[in-house]
Image (cartoon, rainbow, N blue to C red):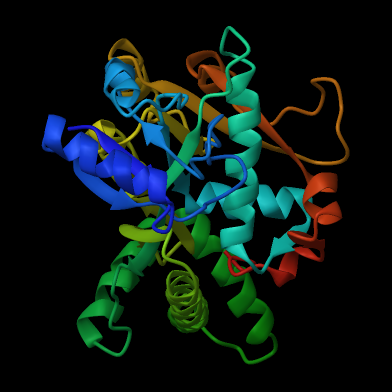
Length: 343
């Protein structure tokens, strides 16, 4: 079905709508004048007249109006949240307005995309949606439960590296008390367990803060959708987190939403989505990878995107730290200003 967009108060456009309805059962939708990048201004008195299918040029001529018919290209962004914050940490900047950030990324993407197209025609582009994949949960441990403590004690006994480190701490804390080996081992585990508990509770606080942050982002814009597909797998003994689920959700949606976009814009440093990218390119989709680069504009230096991802993408969109700061989208700050600063 062809969609035609026109200004609500434009009389010629209204007449064209009536004409087109007689020719074919068109789907009609009022167009609001979006970004300067995405809008098409035709050569006649139409304020905005877009036909997605070039074959309907003859229909336009039926109204004795010489409008310019172009195909609207749809852009959809897929953002790995952890990679995004990792890039900001590297750049040592932080962002308050994420709608402004992604609008800027979209504009830069369209500029770079148009350089890949032959001819002088500037095809119109539309930002359809931004999907931002994040972690919103973590493994739950009830550290007040005796069974949990027993489980961790057994792991403590089996992990020689962790056990020896805490035994050294226990020996220092019990120096001069004449404690026997069993007392030293018990003290070592208790010290270790208290450390587990403190670390885990901090992670819970951080996760709660991240979820509040993501809710605020969603409330501030209609274009960004937070996809809560990830969780943290917790290793209490070694105090480590492993992110699970984000890359899978990212790759699956890249395929699932393919009918709704022509160009996929990827904000990710991972190569897990590369197989999906290869499949989509065979269907005619274009893949763009955003590359956040520290410092001012350079001639191809200081690249941070993984080489495999660069080779798979159709084109790279460099986003420079200096430009983000210059435009007011980002401000320079310390690493501890980020939502993920303690992870």
